[in-house]
Image: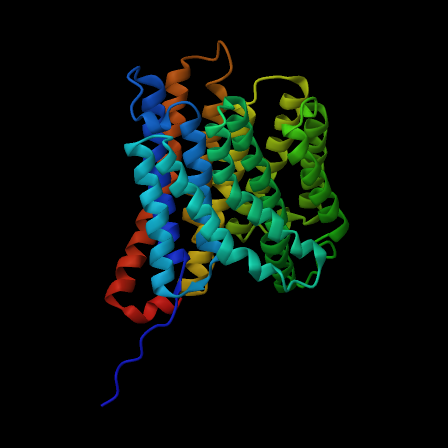
Length: 382
């Protein structure tokens, strides 16, 4: 009698994508409640806690799901457990040393698994992923160090650094996800896309944002960091226009990814102007985190899910739903910071509701597939 063959690996996105979407669905309404209720609960989401959890909780979970790929089940279970325990610890003992250590250890463990894969890259532009992903994974540990040194202003800058690192990652991955997909769609139309990765533009983006990141934490470097971010935003828009996304009207999923890339361009430009002029950065940060990060991560997760599951793009109705809800979310969140535009609390709750509707839908889709995978173990191969 032969024993049934066991799966040796499980795709990481099957675990981390449902968890990330479920967490995003829960954490944003709780954050708005913590900001508006007056009782500062949950304490983990007050002040910098909201940004910390969205960047090092949600965003790192998406990065893990996308970059880990097929993973040995025990290792995947260990990484996911570490992420989950870190999130729980943050709510039980917000910003305590044990809670921050758990978040830092998850980041370091993730970096240990994904960074070495880019050592063999032939092009130096691809090798940039090593310090980029490594730096992003180290930032939770940097936050812990800054907190222990009593440098509150530096902890805030660590979060801003995380936004810049994620911005560079989104800009870089655009050339690896959006450009090939548009080129493939052009091929089906009998066209040819000449401007694909656009290596010179990509090199310029890498240089600009690599300069902006350290300049942001150097005293007196805000003007340099802001200028670099503005130029990066302009280059991202230039790159996007050369992809001619308007010719892909039959692929709403590609239009959605390009919309996220547009938000990244706008957000970086506004963020750069704000830090260079010493202005308020909250609204501009949310253009990046809700508009760009929310749209691109939801688009990439849904695209990955449907390509693995059915070998097809996501349904048009789902893409339109995600774009509509996230557009409402980012506009409402920005409006909440504009004086005399109405009740800011109502805008905050509108943004939270729209965000929750988007990621709640994805959480249901991904969790249902995860459940089917448990009942049909062979599906774990995808």
